[in-house]
Image (tube, rainbow, N blue to C red):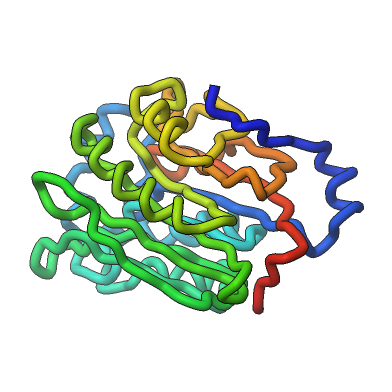
Length: 271
């Protein structure tokens, strides 16, 4: 279910066949740079969600080293510059640490000077267009960050999401996202969707879009004992998937998901 004939080919053969047409993707909920290893850390380290912490930058530096090997990285739960982050925009900081020339962020919720809840995309390619979408919900504060790469005729659309905790709200948000992606041809949707591959929400996407998830059950949460797959990278059938996996890199309460895709020849990205 929900693979829409997406093909995974051998990584080594694919690398030799298409060279620069390969695109390395990552989605990572970094929990504003807070390292969480046990459930009790949600209580004992809860102050770090509102106050600065000396360990945060060293943890971000390790994340920056990891993401340096990728082409497009979607980040959830970053801080865009407030008291808790030392007034550092974490999208900009990680872009610098990872050597990304292009970075964009979307602030979805502010708590005065204490916190700026945001999502971000880091890229080695220049986006043609960047759009911020406010997703529906009873409580405002969820959004979709939409970047279009390449040319206006045959571009690549990347949509970053962090969906709501409640199923009813997630379905409303995915209805909005379905209309958005159905207007595009070559699409990547990534992020913390807060739902499993085998879920009502994915059934909705299966019926209303052409998006596919080539590998199910890449468990990412909680990072210290992952048994739930709530972080995802979905692609349109026009993109050939070489590989996908969850990395054992527990510097947040989530693990990152990575994917390697081959772009069609009609899509040209600009560095």
